[in-house]
Image 1 (cartoon, rainbow, N blue to C red):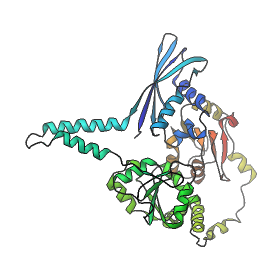
Image 2 (cartoon, one colour; image 1 turned 45 degrees about the horizontal axis):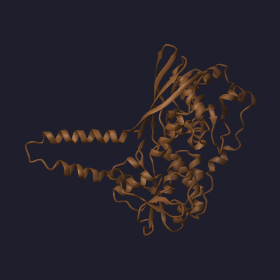
Image 3 (spheres, helix red, strand yellow; image 1 turned 90 degrees about the vertical axis):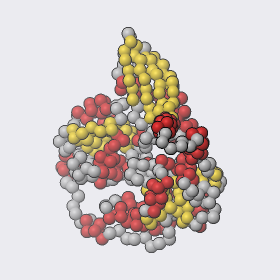
Image 4 (cartoon, rainbow, N blue to C red; image 1 turned 90 degrees about the horizontal axis):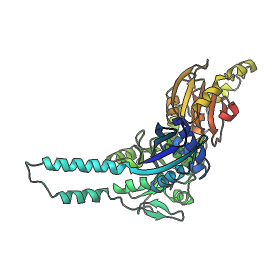
Length: 416
């Protein structure tokens, strides 16, 4: 569930389509506030939702409403709202875009709960009803979030017991810390939204055990990998699939932490499932724990004598039909992906945000090529390689540290 919903009105001095408006929003905001606030990247990470546009024609003008779900915090959401107001053109026509409201969806949910509570109290006539004002006061106290402290030189959001606890629970952001504090868990500290592990956390890991507690979604996977590459971790805990730490109940938090496993058991389990990346992370953790690094499995050596593919086969595998360029043009602004079989027949079209999960459940070799109106990320590339996808074509190429050998990466510009 998104935290906020940005509602904006747009008026254009000409007749345009919905995808023209979406394309203008992405195109005219790109790079204004740097890569960290790029709308496509925010959408790929699940920090903002799919942009919805409702329009109608009035004479020679197009007017409409734009809806943007946001999982950013209040300040970032306000910045996003101001950013989209900078759009002043749609195609060749002048445009005016104005944010009319930012709805706090969580407050709307609480309002409905309060209205339902009031309704229940009215019907509660057989017994003496307690003081409604006292109930509301207690509910307000329960909803009042405790304030984290600022810990260390990096001023990271943290609980009050970080110094005296033997084990530190490491989470992603301030909201996660607040939720754990709400249920009495005080030995918690957040990375603070930094792309790199802060030095304050690295110092803690020198003298304390670290339990990494991350969201049960793709964002959690990214944080998990980043931390394991750079920090000695002792235990790993995950929120339930598709859930975030900041939204868990006390019972769900207790259950997730009770299921925490050692970092070596966690990574070894992924290695058994065939993850090469987990093997690499396992070796990093062994070095950080100052343990002997395990040798690569013997099976890898047995595969070495196999002959490489013949040049003719390689050429056939990499053939790209001309229709792909036309498909790419039609895909711009839709934030969708098209999956193709070996004969370049369309298997299905899905939202980009669902692509990694779709591939993860696909049979190896069933998907030959993918065209997506999104960024080619390391996570997507690795998943595609594991499923024997041969060609990935995206709007842009993200930061790729390691490119698998048997996959071709292209951008829309290179395709055209």
